[in-house]
Image 1 (spheres, rainbow, N blue to C red):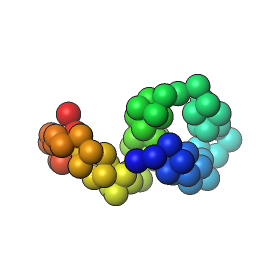
Image 2: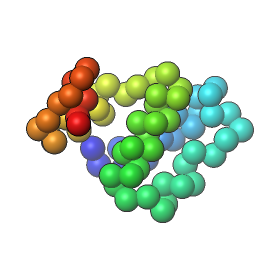
Image 3: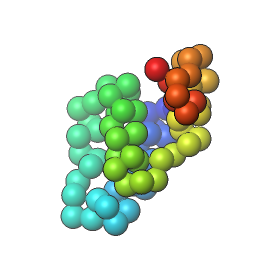
Length: 72
């Protein structure tokens, strides 16, 4: 997943009720692409709204899958 796509997803998450009044996007300026992807996953899990397409695409890039089809 590209950095732009990750940032767009993070922006979508920012508008969810779970993150109202909290800033989850500013930290992205300091994160590597890999760390940003992990941050997005953590935020998705916290919001209860995992982006399956993003995880599936990452799994394809890695070529490895673990439990529930997620990369290990």
